[in-house]
Length: 176
Image (cartoon, rainbow, N blue to C red; front, side):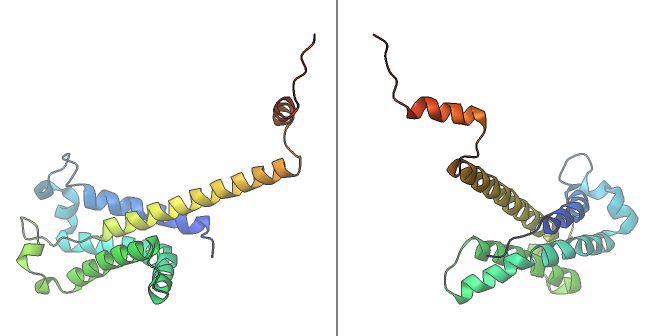
């Protein structure tokens, strides 16, 4: 299994933050959707293109290992977590790209109250980033526990744990 490196996690985290802030401004309640200064200054179309530009490297570069593993699991007929992640992020990203490039082909039921397109660049970027972060934390934990296990196995533990082992491994003698 190929290990994911930390730069794969750090870059999506840095790029994901603007995507989330742009797409979630209207949902926070602080700024109403109709009075959003970013959408007024850029317009709805350019704001969507900005989300596309920021989410694309996160989903395609940061999520590439997930797409590879998802494809391998489909080919081997052993579906797993990576199949779900690849399918979910891929579908949301591809739908959003289609909606951005061909907005006239999206039915009205897929649009918001004001007729705006609903795109899902932000969820795809967030999911990729969080799963990559979880992978890095899992690898660090495994590495640390493996290192500690080998230290215990070869007697290279600290004095404190050695004292504990000595106390519990030797039978106590009662003085009479």
